[in-house]
Length: 128
Image (cartoon, rainbow, N blue to C red; front, side, top):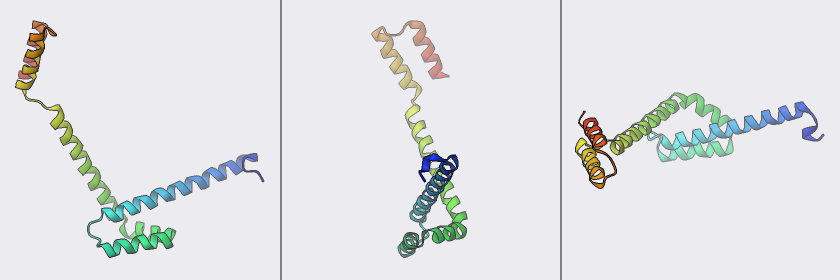
């Protein structure tokens, strides 16, 4: 039977594609968590990976049951660390001292790019 002849055959095909992609996502998350966990030593990490290669479904199920809570905590900590780093970078890049802003405005004013009123507005905003 040709796969695309029947509507239900298409639905079944999409279901199994969804299951396969979901399994791959779980597998990659488990592998990332194994290497993210600093409490596991190298031999235990190698053992988990070895079991994931040879008994993938059972190992993934056991890993999610046994280490799921820690997996969520490590993922959350990683997310917060990334958010903190992004916020710190944005604050570092976006913040400039009032004297820097006034200096930039003065250079633009001297070049004739901005008017006296615009310079006064920028200066007042920088000092506020």
